[in-house]
Structures are given as structure tokens and as C-alpha cells.
Image (cartoon, rainbow, N blue to C red; front, side, top):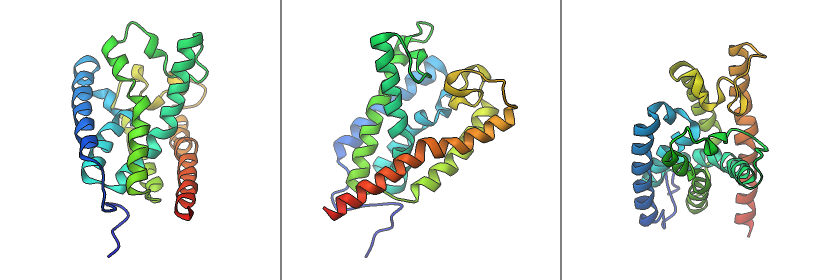
Length: 210
């Protein structure tokens, strides 16, 4: 019988050691973030990905893992490029990671924010192991279209979570707030998710042909 693409799995599944280590990571990270910078920060899509990947690992849900692969693959790569370049040259080619060099932010939270480097590796490995659900693009879009308005309504403007008040962490007043928010909801899937989705489909076809 064919297994449903949204849940699970080839016989090997995902290794138990990965589930346990990632569980320990999420518990440590979530508690530290809650105490040091508050629960509002969990509205960030990349922060939310920690919880959803954890759920996806334990349930071995192809859909959840694939959704979060879309969420973190390109974002994590660009985050690494921006932080790495700024660390070596002092210049942020992309922006949005200035907080990593701001002493006003707790040192521990900045260290823990290095998860942006390994989260794509975890999601990528899990996607490679259990397969990619092509419907993940739609589901991740729906999730984003819920989280972005919620970030605008329920978080402080100063935090600019998910850049709902301006791109690359900077406030904007060029566009009306509602117009900007709608534009953000449309551009996020097109710029962040769609390229990863198309590349993953291409790699999946190549893998099956090989």
C-alpha cells in the first residue's frame, strides 16, 4: 500500500539520535529565548521552524519537514552569508542580522541564533531521508499568510518581527502599512519558498533517475 505523502515514510525513517539531540536543542533554545527576550520572538518564521521541525522529526511527517525545508533553506543560507561577511568585513551585504553584533542583545541569544546555520542541514537531511512533499509549498504559504498578519497584530512594532514593519529589519514609511503587509505576504513565498521548491523538485527528479 502506498503511504500518504503528507505523513510518512520509507522503512528506514529518521534516526532516533537526531530526534533526541534536536529535542534537547529545542528545549534549551526555547527556554533561553523565553526568559531572555520573551515569547514574542517565537512569531519569527525561522524560530517557529524549530518547533515544527521537531514535530516533523518525531511524527516523521513528510509534509511538515518539507514545509520547514522551504522556510529555512534560503533564509539560513542568506543569514550565514550576511553574518559571515559582516564578521570578516564589518559590512552587511543583505541586512537583518545586525543584532548579532549588537551588545544590547544578550550574548546567549546571539550565540543560540547560530541555529540558522544548522537548521537547513537538519531539514535538508530529513527531507532527503523521507522524501519531499510537493504540496508543502501551498501549506507553507498558508502558514505564512497566517503568521505575518499575526506578527503585525500581536507583536511590538519595535521588534519588526518577520519584517512586518519594514524590510531587512528597518522601518518603512514609503507605503501604507496595509499595502506593505499585503506585498510582503505575496513576495515572501515567491522570493523565499518558490526557488527552493523548484530546486528541490529538480533534485528529486535527478535522484530518482539516478
